[in-house]
Image (cartoon, rainbow, N blue to C red):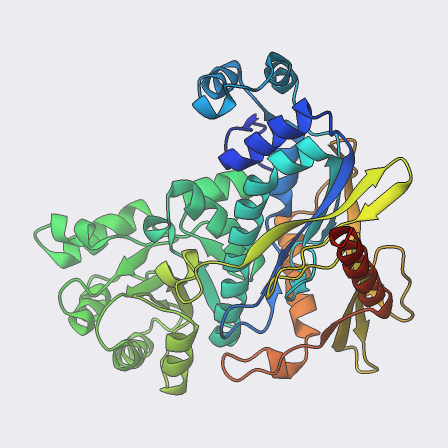
Length: 453
């Protein structure tokens, strides 16, 4: 689990705070429910893999306004007419609400709530930006990692992307999400410390270049790491480097290829290692890899045991953002819930708190999801959203990251084969339940009637 920290509430969009002030000074303090979901799957994605819940709960348990945050807000012209009482309220601000969520490592689809937040409306509103950023980012990376793992066909994949990530913290969280998606480990030492992810590393070309002789560089490194040396062999001449390793009597755990024709070189390196008595030395390949390149290389006969995937994984380069939204679905007044929805063209949302019901066929494979009201029951299905926080506190300990990874692997295996490929996948069936459809029509009529008065 991450070290305990106080998360700054100021890490949000300004309009969350102006709405909060308007709610407060208008004495609008009803409880409300918001749901976080993705409107549409990115191109070439047939499913997403839920991730980021652990950090979302960390944030909700510890979000606070510091005194300096409040003084900064007081000084903004936009808050000139806001009451002093609002800023006093911010001094004691914390999250008191409840959260229902889909477990990390669970495949999810468009319009399915990843989480639902119910709290006094100001609390639920202020946390929107942080929750969206955190949850959609990790979900995006975990989903990309799952595709890379699928392409690797049982071979290990190590996440190498922190140096190309959009900032160090993004790289650290990307390593966590990639592990959920199935990676063997990461090169990010902080991710290893914080999340107990296995860490892996080789050496850089600079280490080889620092010595006058390539063989000396290999020997010096192997002397310090006699049981786990991983040697980078493409600084000068890749094939000749293998001969130097053999001539020096070294038995590295792994050699790494980072340039050139990786298919041809991996086959030649494998042949030489085997012929010279080093069949246990594994070959790691890196250099701008993704699921498409890996698929092509394996189809071409590449002899690679481990894939180091960096930029394309830590940034989800081909689909670098999700259409995540956080929509108000209920406001609770004295008479109970009064559902809310957005009706604008192309961006309609459904009213009311929801549940996702997943149904499996006789073969154990999932065959359909139904998005229904949270009060619905759906025979022979499994409800995906579970209560994870109440009164601003977690209800139970979180599963370990390895357990989440294993859950993801098992759940992905239950998806139809037709939606697990890289190209031309069939969409997984997701539909809205009849009761939810009826609730939407009822809400439309209610809005139409109110505008005609």
